[in-house]
Length: 415
Image 1 (spheres, rainbow, N blue to C red):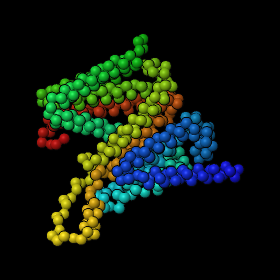
Image 2 (spheres, one colour):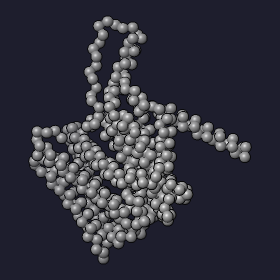
Image 3 (cartoon, helix red, strand yellow):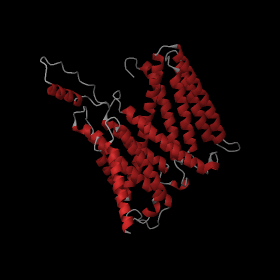
Image 4 (cartoon, one colour):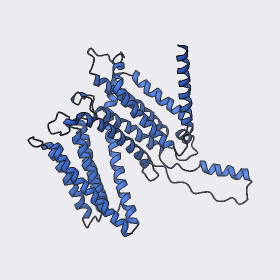
């Protein structure tokens, strides 16, 4: 007993030392990666609790206060939502606290980049406290998460459009035949992949002998949008490049597949029902990986100095002194200038992205609804998930078309 106690104490001490070493090694440059790592940790914790926490939560009286104990899936969903709420509150508090940070001289700049041991402790406390709040608050958070997830997907669409237009402008800017050929090759590859993907969708989700008019409508509508992208892009009045149209076409087709794959497994038009377990595991892994990658890109891209919510540009440097200063004074002046540099991205918006992503990841892990009975233990399955993906694809198409025609409709405005 004594030996086991000593061993446990040694392990705890080693774990604390390891955590202290890790957080002390987080520099100013790697702070954003550390926040992404903390968000990834929340997804792992949610996944683990989703699998193992149900028997424990059934014994907590303020959670299981029902006359009839709910199904196991209800407790799995509740565990995910509670971890997500703790993560959401953590990043929301940081987002509110960081409003108005414009230069590195602000004391909050150091708090954003440092104090990692305290941040990890606060994050753990918030997540633990969420298991002591009543179910009504969790229900309210679940309803809010559907709206927040939609905002997160909208941010993703805007950033994707910004990315593909920037990609096209960069290659065209080289003004060399090699890069023009590269644009053509990438565009052709995207279009071949798009139409091949559509054929696969017809094979999987419109099986012969079944009345699958809804699935046919989704696929045909996506194909119509793909053709419309090319027509508008190549119209003489627009004079756009085919690369953005091809990339957005492939993305819209992927969203169509993602939506159809989320249909209930007992739906006769879902050709994936024979591989439910494999699809569930693959969907979870791909969904979480995609979420982490999209959050990393969103947090870095949306918080860059070129975005709408970024801090203002740096002030002009002060003139040189008329009289030379001693070495100590020169170093002090240099340090002062270093601290007065404007921040390179919006800290508040950076954390807001993580807040919305917390809601989105919770919806992925719970199938966008607490009514998981229709999909069992499968992840991101159900009609709410289907319509969210399909509508997101239509929103992507509308925003892309607007980005093409807006400069023509409003020639006096910058887009």
